[in-house]
Structures are given as C-alpha cells and as structure tokens.
Length: 365
Image (tube, rainbow, N blue to C red; front, side, top):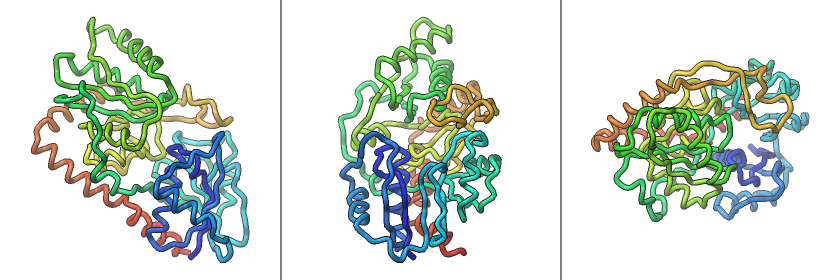
C-alpha cells in the first residue's frame, strides 16, 4: 500500500498540524506515504519537529506505485485522477456549505474522510453523496506525558484554573465563557480564567474582556483573566495546558477540537458546547441551540453564512457546569481518578491507534 498525500502540512497552523499527524498515523501503521505540499499561507512555516523532519525526507520519494491519493486541501482544488483511489479530507464547522458548490467537487472523489460526526452530517446536508468515513485526528502522546518544566504563572498558583485555547474569533465564542465565569464565581474564590488565544494583541483581548464584564453589571470589580496572546513555543504552550484544571470550549462550531484532545492527553477534563465536533472528549457537553451563522471570518465566499447554522451555548448551563466541575475536581481524589481515566481514553487517539483505523479503511475496497 502506497499513498500520495497532498496537504498543507507546512503551513504551521492547526489545520496544517492535523495533516502532519495524519501522515504520522499512516506511517505508524506501516503505510508507505509520499507527501507533497500545498500552502495557503504567505510563507513556509515548517518547524524543526521530528515529524516535520521525517516528512521532509519522505518528500524525496517517488510517486511511482502509489495506488491511493489523499487530497487534504480545500475542495475547490480537488482533482480526480483515474490512476488512484481518490480521497478528499475535509473539516468544516457549520451545518452546511451548499453556497460554496464544494459538494460537486466532493462528489468527484471515490471517498471522503472527515474528522468527526458533525462534519459528516454537514457533508450530507450539503449534498455530498460519495461514501464518507470518519478519520479522527491523532497525537504523538509522548509529548504530553512529561512536558518540559517551565516557570509557572504566579497568579495561577494555588488556584483552580479554567482554561481556553483558540483563535480570537466569533466562532470560538469567548464572550460566553467570560460571561459564565464571572456570573458564577466571586472574586474572593480561588478560581482563575486562563485564555490562550491568537489573531489578536494582548491589548485587544483585554479591552474586549472589559467590555464583556461591563455589560454584566453585577459587581464593581471582577477577577482579572490571565491572557496569553499571540504565538507560543511548544514548551510554553504545554506549560499552559499543564496549569489548567478544566478546559472549556464554548465554540459555536468545531470540526475537531485538537486542544481538547491535547488537554485530555494531559488528564485535563473538558466542558464544551453540545453537538460540536468534540465527541472524542470525555467531558461535559453543555446545552446548546441552533442559530444562523453570524460574524464568521470573512475568508471564503459562501462559507459559514447565515444560510447555514452553528450552535449557541446556553450561558447559564455553562456557568452551572463550571461550578460543578470546580466542586468535583477540587477534591484531590476525584482529580487524580479523572486524570487517569482521561489519559487512558486519550490512548485511542495515538498515531498508532488512528493509523490502524486508516489502514482498515484503506483495505476496505
């Protein structure tokens, strides 16, 4: 079995890292992979990780003998080649993408792969009739077993820490998290909110937080959030995850939330919007309801418009679940038991386990 994998694995984005891990999963299952890069970024942002070094070497291989091609690109770039089994890999965050016309490109493929059940439903809702298989993302779990020691954040010491990781965009719904946190927790309680975000400056995020808190009008002074804005090194990022007691993702839509999987690998439980692409997570789903997409990043025409839906989390239910998590996980015995259970489940998302699944799918012809 020899697979040609066309993807954006050099982009240095979450999307690019998903492609890197897909390739690593295939390699772990003994699949011969020939990677070829495409990019949607202004520059090649490949880092020096072991995974990227391996991919660089694999790029030297010939495509001769490849019998399958995985096109991990935007559907508008899909091309059917009768010399291969053609597979498209797609991740989307809203209920459909009918306006893009992508369904016609997806239907050129012999098979579509998606990272989660919500994305599978989105493809079906959009008119995709090609067979659809769920191939979840995976991780090199060894990175999360013993992360490098970093200087802890002083304001988090001795506190229960709710954490968020994601871009500072409308879809991630940071507002709901900030509202729920300050509605539920008094400044005198030993609780903190840690926000790791990007695509905004520290000043922008701080100004936004003040705007949200002023809108609550429930007290004169609020606990300050701990904000880490911009890009972080892998070591610094893992150090932030390590200081979280509970990961919270109030997103309106996720194809697959990789930070929640990373948190699970470190034994940190999650609270998240019910119905988004986080069924892989052993955590607490919070009540949600469908609303038309609004305020999505203006990137691709016809994608995530108000003709599609995403999910709005119930802020009061989010606050209630955060309180319950705080009460339960503040007990050391509960915390340690939960950590062990989460790490055990995370093992099913290792490169080795997902690689086995991919191999089974590829052999099922």
